[in-house]
Image 1 (tube, rainbow, N blue to C red):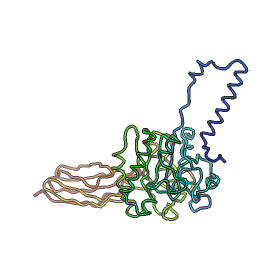
Image 2 (cartoon, helix red, strand yellow):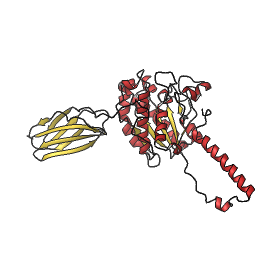
Image 3 (tube, helix red, strand yellow):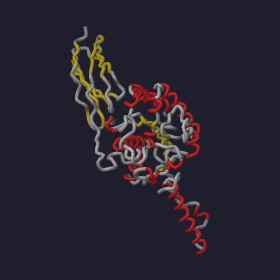
Image 4 (tube, rainbow, N blue to C red):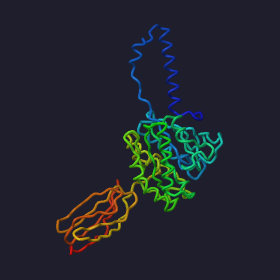
Length: 370
C-alpha cells in the first residue's frame, strides 16, 4: 500500500535521492567524489509530466464491492501508461487518494480500490459541481490546486451534477470560463483535456446541448501557450456502460480511460490507446449510423442538409450531375453543403469514423434549374 498522499513518483524519487546521497558519501570517504565542475555537467533525467485529474464521482470512482467494480477510470488510464512503458514519465497529482462514497480521511485509504497498484492521486470530489467547486468537504479552487501541485496538464470531466440539478448548458460553459481563468492565473502555460460528457443521456437534452457547444467554446479559448483538447469517445458509450444511469461499470471506466488517453496522446504523451486493459472488457468501435438527407434547389445551386450522427469524425458527400461525380469530405460538425449543380442532380452522404463508414443515405434527386 502506498502511504496516503504519496504518489509512486515522489516515493521513487525519494528512494533514488537517498541512494544517491549514500553513494556520494561513500565516494567522499574514499576520496573519489566528483568535483563540483564535473557534477555540474551530469545529465538530468527529464521531469515527469504532472497530470491533475479533476471531476466528480465518475472520476473519483467507486470503492471495492460497489457495482462498478472498484477500479475508477483513472486506474485504467494509468495502466495504459504502464503497458506503453511510460509510467515513470507521468505523475498523477492532487489532494485525494481514495474512491468516492465518503468524505472522511479514512475514506481516502487506497485499499478501498479493487486494485490500488496505480498512481491514485487525484482532485475529484464525489457529488461536486463545477459551478460550486468548494461547496463540499474536500473541494478546492482550481487556482489553489494548480499553485499547490504545479500540473503540466489538467484533465477535467465536470458537468453532469450541474446539468442534472438545473444548470443550463450555456451557464455551465460560463462556469468553465471562470474555472479556466483561475487555472491560467496560477499557470499560464498549463494544457487542458476537457471531456465531452459521453454519459450525456443522464442529463437528457441538456447534456447533448452542452457537448454540441463545447467545440466552439474550446476553439475560441485554446492558445499556442495553453492548449485545450476536447476528449471524445471512439467507442460507443451507452446505458450498458453505466450501472445506475450515471456511474460507469468496469467496461465504461475503460472506455473513459481510452478517451482521455487519446487526448493526452494528442498533447504529445506516449500512451497505449488501442486495447482494453482487463481481459473480458472486449469492445470495438462501431461505424456511425446512416444519416438522413434532404436536398433543395435555389437556382443553379443545390443545398444538402443531413442529420448529424454520434461518433462521427467526418462526412463524405457524393453528388452525380451534369458536371460528373463530385466527392467531398467535410468535418464532423457540418450539417449542410451548398453546391453549384445547374442540372438534374442526385446526392447521397455517409458518416465516417475510425472504424469505417456508415451506409450511404438514401439517394435524393432534384431537377434542373428553372
